[in-house]
Length: 259
Image (cartoon, rainbow, N blue to C red; front, side, top):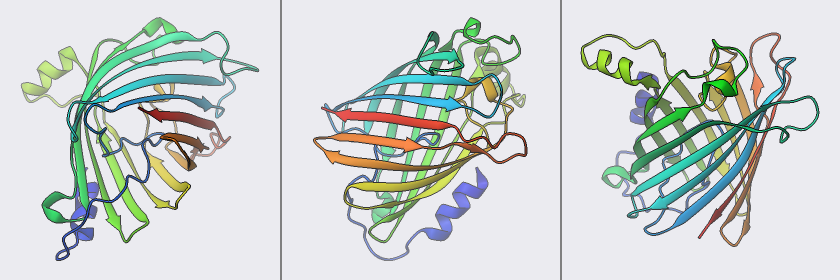
């Protein structure tokens, strides 16, 4: 978290008043974005995150609905299906979790090229979706998150997000000064935006989006996000573990439509 904030301070332009530019992406794979939905705008996203780093290959299929209450404040809900597979990553899906949440964005803070967003999700995992009892989340979780981004020129953006997952009992202990067990998720990266495609790279220390591998290898995820028009977005990525023995590339894709 300190590294993320320091990077923003260093890159903060000190003079020019920034004009809000077009959003380079609607979604990334393992990083929370700062960009909000416009007022009364609906966004639907469906995707697939496939983990091939272990013999028991697994996949998560999230479906998300986002709605803009204002141009800066949105609400959202998500359902995610989970499967372990040998051939098809879409076969035998079981409900893994559902969640509801909200996010508020601060764009071009103080007339600068810096953006930020704060959010909170409440997640309801289904523990029986995972085979091993010691994997996955065990109860209702509260997930506060902070996202930041810095625009560099007309095409480049550096971004990052930090989040924490804590159960109700842990939240009460946190208010009493007890440090939570969850060490948090930090993701950083950069993107280059072109007219019809955005190229991005994310580094994630761990990912709550892959709840069966919370203690697995950090991931590097290069991706290409295509903008064919008509408020559609198609993203294709390749999450790769950085530790020895977990470097078999996975596959990630999502399709986004705005109304």
